[in-house]
Length: 213
Image 1: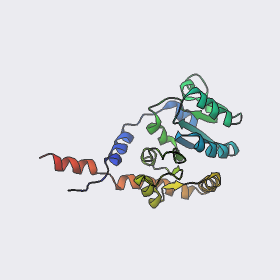
Image 2: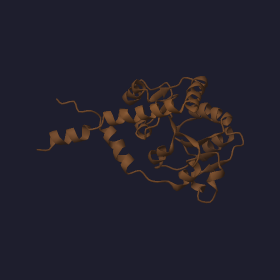
Image 3: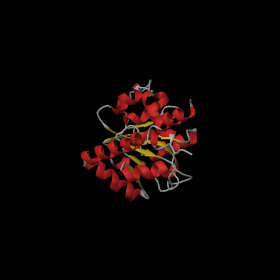
Image 4: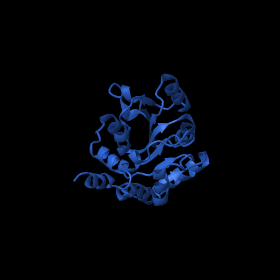
């Protein structure tokens, strides 16, 4: 038996190299701090939307796990009259004037994370968190809910101080206020997230070296 590691670390680095440049996100994010929430569910959204309704200097990108019309309307209602653009309408609207961008399509999230200053990965208040490595590979801090014990990468990110568990709105507020007020802490947390991914890369090469003669 040979223990090699987890090939998912190599995969997210490969995805990073192949990431798309997204002009709609670039226009939306230009000149602003950007918070990107990926694969979010309602319990996640109730926490971070409440915060950003009060902190409007940040631009908010929401890529919900469920993109059915009922859920999209639910999110828009929670945003308390803020100017919202859906990604599929981005070509037809002036996204520079929008405060919130809702990604109502699939297949873009791994590329969207590149534009974040802080990321949030959903599912931690339900069945379990989604893919934290897709966000961490971009050298940005990753926030997630409490159901993460069975996810080794979440434990690794926490140990590296690049991933942060929250239990409540109060936890989220305390953490975001720290990031908002301390640029150095924000950058260091992001660097640690990226370092965690880089540190555990290489399993694919080792597997192939052992399998191929």
